Structures are given as structure tokens and as C-alpha cells.
Length: 316
Image (cartoon, rainbow, N blue to C red; front, side):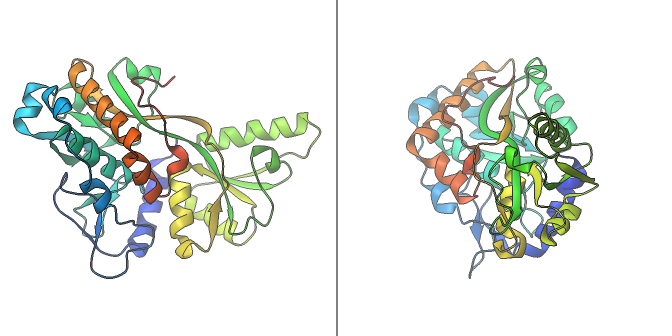
């Protein structure tokens, strides 16, 4: 993942103020739901979308015998990355667009899903040892990881440009960053991209990008709000979620367009379990085809990262 855990911790801490109580049944029972009253800022009510998924008898029949008999998929995530996967304010209920997609996939397969929270670095080894069936944690599908596990790709993430609400500096893409003050988090792929873009600007006879690298996304947001920088570079899901929640959506906006230097996130599956990989891929593709997938991403505001085909090991 391109973002540091420190950045994710800052984002999660800010959500504690923004998010009001969320309820819902056990994993696999029906998506994110709200406590009575108005929904929390940035937290969509996706229960009806997930509950509307119908079991596919053929896909259920093709499941590995142990999964079909147990009626449950054991999935592990690193639950601290809003809006992908994180805890509601009760500290116990997993929510996020990945959580909803996992529930929808399970429902299509005619089973339920449980979420286990573990360190990101433990996900692949836990999958290889058979402790869990799947991983889904914003994990980039790369050739290096494909040597260890298989992936069913479900989302395309990449670098996104975030501006002040109303985009007063008229930023429409990377080429319009020339001569602008841009903030990034130190040591991320965003910093590398900003330096590369700055070189492209000067080679084209335009002013360089004035890059400011800080220790946290929170510092960058403060600089953007006060006009000290014209833009922030961030990962797509985080940028979209920040723009929707900060100041009740009145502070920032995301520049439209495809993610920059995008690559797929993948659901991890043990390489020895090809039948499960096949089942998950077909279930996800069915959700893409019938529109459920798109509705979930749209509800969370991350449909810019939608894929059209659930590829297996499509990363590079």
C-alpha cells in the first residue's frame, strides 16, 4: 500500500469525531446500517443494497466442500483504512466499501462472511497457513505478491488530486500542477510522482511544481484549507472520503478523472485453493454485471475506482 500506517491512523482519528453510531447485524447479514435518525456524515446506509443480493445456486454448488459445509468465509483485513474497511464508533462493527463488497460476494455464493482484524503484514502468511480463507485489505495486486497468493481484482486505486472546495486554482489534472504549491506526505508514492511531474513541467518550459512534504495528511489538509498549497496528492479512497467528511463536505473536492498511476486492489486467496478463487471471481463478476457492485462503490463515493472485469492476478 502506498500510504503509511501513520497517515491512516490520522484519518481514522478524525473519523471518530465525524461518525455517529452505526448498527447492523453480524458480518454477512446485510451491510452498513445507521442508528435511528439522520445518517452520519460520509457513512452511507448500504443495507438494502447488500440485502438485495440473491444466492446463485450454481456458484454455491461449485464452492469448495469445506466452505459450503461451514456456510461461512473467514476473511481477514487490517481494519483501519476508511473508507475501505474500518470500525464503526462502537469499536466492533466493521464497515466500509470493502466490507460491503465482501458481504455481497458471500451472499451471491450463498454463505456468510466473518471479518478478522489483523496486522497487514500477517495477512499473506495467515492465508498461506490456512487460518483464513480470504484477505481484503486494500492490498495491491503485484507480480511479487502473486508469487505467494492469488488475487481476484476488485478495485483500481491510484493517486488523486484534492483541492479546496470550488477548485479556485482551476486544477484539472497533473499538467495543471505546474507552478502550483502541492503538499504530499513524506516517503509516499505521491512524493515521487510530484517530483516526476515537476521535471515534466520544467522540460516543457513551464514552472516547476513547488512540492511540500509533511509528516501527515492532517498537516496537508490544514495547508490546503488555509490556501498555502493549491492541492494535495492522496490515494483515491482516502481523498474521496476526506472530501466528503471534512467540514461536512464543505472544505475539499477531488479533481475528476482516472486515478493517476492506478493499479488494482485484490482479494487474496491461497494459491492451492483454485476452486475458491474461481468462485469468488464469478461472484464478483456477477455483482459487477447486475449493478450491485457499482451501487456499493457509488454509495461510498469511490466509483472512480470501479473496474469492469474481475480479473485474476491482473496486477503488474
